[in-house]
Figure 1 (spheres, one colour):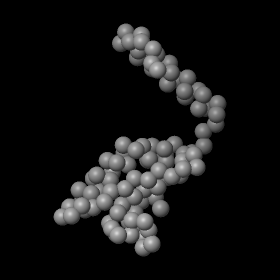
Figure 2 (cartoon, one colour; figure 1 turned 90 degrees about the vertical axis):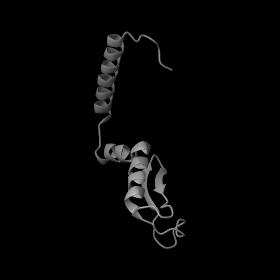
Figure 3 (cartoon, rainbow, N blue to C red; figure 1 turned 60 degrees about the horizontal axis):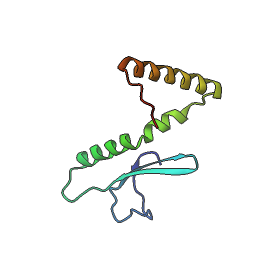
Length: 99
């Protein structure tokens, strides 16, 4: 269930307004959820939910997994990112080694 409300029989059945997102990655499931607090507006809860989804990078991984990328293409993009990162570090004079 990409995005929605909990269903009966769900572990979060006690609160029917429990919003969640699940995305299978590498054999595991990421889940993000928000419980609606007492006297809390549903729009406020949705805002908290969206913020948690953005911070957990669920959507970013979902979009990456939507299309297949050849290993050679991944290597080419990684090399391009490394070149840009080195260029930025040289430009800033940041010659420290990262762990």
